Length: 476
Image 1: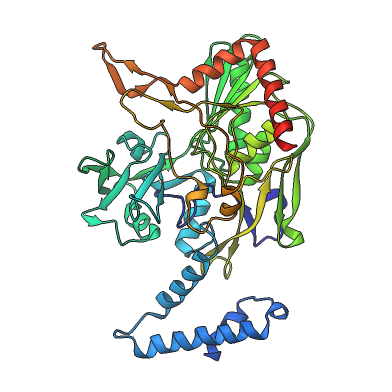
Image 2: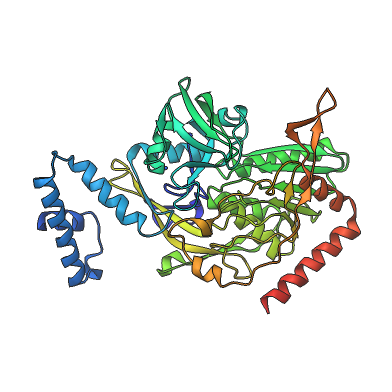
């Protein structure tokens, strides 16, 4: 959150579903001890005598392991393991980044990095426990070009079984320098054996924004919230204004499978379609972590109709945009319920980044109406799950924030009133040159419906009014 940094050493970000132990981009994530810990910057005045005793206990355990373990342990490995264990006990998005991981995260926010271009999670429970599960491949990357799909399981990496690894260890094996290759075993249909794919790592340049003309309307795809997003949006809107006589009559903003990124970019994108007012607020334990992000006057779309597409892969910054435009009654939201990552991570460099950085959850995000995003996500105004012939489950079914071990507010969400299930819309594959359906080229039925609604101004206004009324009713 660049405009609202609390200090030059701290940078709140929305890693979205991108955090160690949860969702990551495999582009790629005794008394002496007590004294050392305190010298690292603890607010000594807030530490109780009981805390000192607990730190002494840690020191004693460290000493016993160091002196008596069957093999001589590495100090750095012991300390990192202790840090990882401490943070893993908090929530899925708090983690320690080594100096290398910190550098990689900075590269990602700039919009380019080396690797496969794949967003993954590792389930802690259920039949897929212990495997690397694909959330989504990033557009135009080695992973997407190789045909990697949502919900694929990676069971082996270069002949080594994934089970038994941590998510960070698996990512470490998947990442690598440009031009190097990695072989993975993939399970797609859980009833069939795995198949192998060999991928060549490359520089993954993630264009934050792409666009195209769809009839009289502008289609804008936002794949991530990097430092390039605001500039990419402005460029896209100017290009669409030139490409369509009189300018687009409306816009589709596609945030599906967008895992998030920088907060200031989410605010800027929301602000582009709003006339000032609140966009998002954060509420934390400390007063410094509580703030409101406000927009500025000037709607770049000049009040023209907007529909936002979301799904279960839309997380964090994506949810802020969808929630802001929805609450302000500026856009219809169409698709399926979003991921539900509504927590703020502040990245705190350690020793100026030489010892990596701490990614610590410090607050929760709330939409302009005061709705918490955490563990629930954004409910679309027009719910439209989609499935294709031969599929038992709707396309894009995936883990959510609420399924992650240790996620905040899960119990509260379990007690919340659930929306009634909607029957999936049966969509079809496009036909190939031979006249047969091409399973690698599905029709985008959600986009088709969005364009149909935009084409009928009366239907759009009625749907917007109905959605606003439904939210007011739900809030009462």
